[in-house]
Amino acid sequence: MITRENLIYSASAAARILGIIYGHSRIVVREWFAVVWVWVPGHRPRFMSKAVFKRHFVERRKAAARALRVTQHIMDSTSFTVRNEEKGSTYIVQTVPAGLICQCEDYRNQVQFLGHGCCKHNYAVLNHLGFNSLSSYLNAAKAGTPIGALAA
Image (cartoon, rainbow, N blue to C red):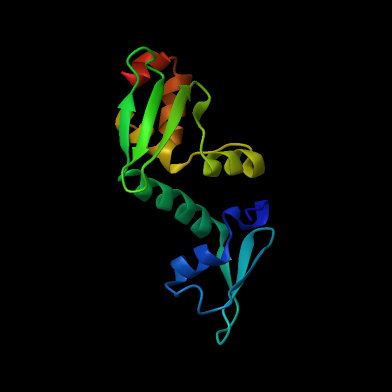
C-alpha cells in the first residue's frame, strides 16, 4: 500500500540506491525532518540525504519513460496516448499550462501525497515534446508559449 511516507522514501528505493537485493534483507526506513534514516540488518544505521531519494524517484521514472511509445492525438494536440508495449498498457496524458495530467495510479498517488505529479507516462510525453524535465516544460508554458505550440 502506497502512503505518503513510502512513496519516495521506501525500503525498495533504499535497496536500489545502496545496491542491495531487496527481499533478502528487512530494510527499515524512517523519514526525518531533513534526512532519511536507513538500517539494513547486519550493518550500521546511516543517514541518507532526502535529495538522493528524490533524484532516484525522478531518474527511475525518466528511465522507464524511454521504453514507452507516444502518439499525439490528431484532433487534440494537447492529448497523447502513451503505450507500454511490454505490458500492453495504454494511458492518456493531457498537457496543460500547469503541467501534465495522466490517468495512471502512480500519477494519482503523487498528486494525492505530494500535491503534484510526474509519472513515467508524463516523462515520455515531455521527451516527445523535446523537454528533459517538467520544470523546463513549465518554464516554457509560463513564458507564454501556447500549449498547442508546445505539443507541436
